[in-house]
Length: 240
Image 1 (cartoon, helix red, strand yellow):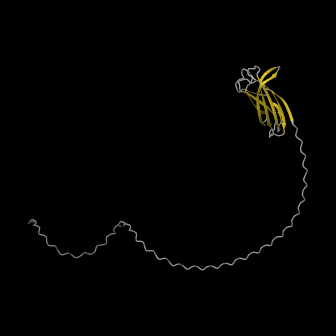
Image 2: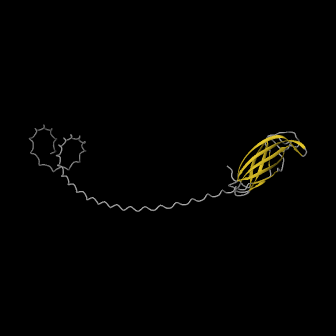
Image 3: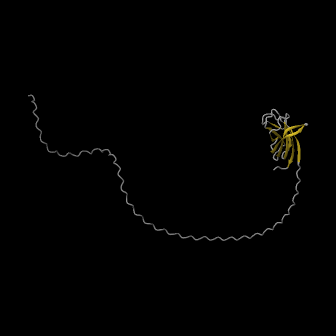
């Protein structure tokens, strides 16, 4: 006939006794390496070892014997003294040379134009004299300065000396004197320049001439100044 319905579940049975231990299973695979452990603290310092024993000194070496002293060489014989030479005869003193010739000459100093202009105007003379290379000279120069209108009887003047054609050493000094002189049959007021000049041409290799430049410190536009002069020269052997 037809299967009948299932019956109700029965109650659980009691726990059975433990079964026998099974056999050991196969070994498991190797696990991964563990993390590195922390560095350990330093160990304690060990105790100092005892000093080693001192070694025995080495034996002293023997002293070497001194070398033999060399013999002293003999002294050479002294040479004979040479004979003294005869004293020479003193020569005669030479005669004093004659004094060199003194040369003197003189001439005129001319000016091509008047001094005419504002204070400080000047006029330079034409070259004068003939001076030789390598020689020295002493000169005296006299220049008269006047104006024909006679508007001024005195005026301040200055003078300088220069060379033309070479460069000798020139030293000069002068005085200015005013007064009256007689010219062309009449009295004329004027000023005179008296100049002392020393010319050292010892180092000069060419001949040359001199020039005089006269300067006036007044306005001379209304009364031009006339200049006339002369010079005297002496050739000297040396200038100190």
